[in-house]
Image (tube, rainbow, N blue to C red; front, side, top):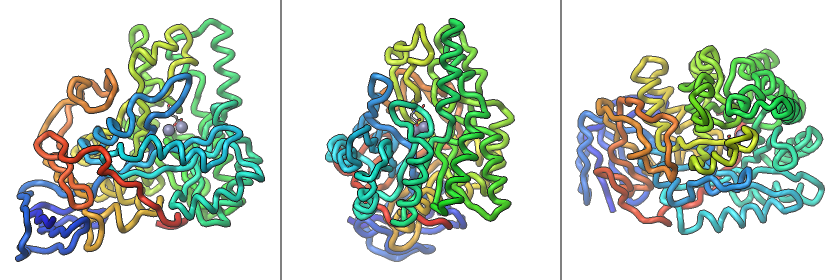
Length: 460
Ligand code: URP
Ligand code: ZN
Ligand code: ZN
């Protein structure tokens, strides 16, 4: 199949110009003005923006967590992703204690194979690093799983101690991978949770008050120090606050580079939502929690200063009835919320349209940097000859409102209900095929492929 996208404004991390894009099979064959080619189909993109397909490197599909499962599976989650312009997602295959890392991959393959509409990969979430599992790091990298996620919180379930962290870092450095982290101080959080429960403070607000900024700043600094000592390529997921970003700023003074992801909710929503009426605040119970307005300003500035490279979602939805597991005890509310469908449009609307970031920074943060950091560039993350034809055709003028009534997440609420957004994903191509058009999907589950990723880099 060949396709000609005509006359759109092509935007990459570095350029913006009007051109035609000629696609043959799965890849881009030519880019230029008024291309004279015979294409089997043509798409008129006049007046539209043409972006590389979004890459969301922080997604939890069908995740067993806090006594339940996140409510989007590969079929529903990848459908929502495509509607919003995300063509590749990276999920987390979670090793359970006493299990091999490979068994986690096998388990996640059962969830994903034949079910995804978009392309996908996994980070390997290491929860049990020991002499038996150490040799698996090399084997996983050979399979194209080149990033290893650690948790410094969720003790007894996911958390690793500092000894395991440093051991893993040494091995990942040796084999050419990347260590990523949920950086919050698990012991301190557990103490504060117990304290609040002991005082009978059970409302969703106490989830927030059990994870103050210092818990994230301290763990981020500790992780950065261990990454400096071991010299491993390192990445902090879902950073929320000024204190944590200042640890990264401080590390640059000794010439260290640690990659940082924030998530769209931390740029746009704040902790006042936890004071909503009744149990409403549970909709935004996630870890780390939403922060203050001053933290949002820090994160926007961090994007512009090059300290924050990626905007993900930490998409991890739960139905209200699942959230109600913690109706009488905030510590039992499943952590997470739905977001994958709205990341690209929200960042465009609130970032580019409102003049907070440039359009090229938007492409970097939604696509290019994740492709580079996670070993998929230039196959993914840009619009260039020989790259995969993963493309969003975007109307920068169309206004619409976000609602659980119209979103494609398998979730009965939206954290952004009623938000007015300027800019809409109209048509999406994935490896040369139109996958979203006229408000519908054009492919079936199973079209999405596992992406074997390359070595991670310390420089992007
Ligand atoms: O609240 C969250 N973030 N849920 C998913 C698990 C994690 O910590 O990323
Ligand atoms: Zn996390
Ligand atoms: Zn997460």
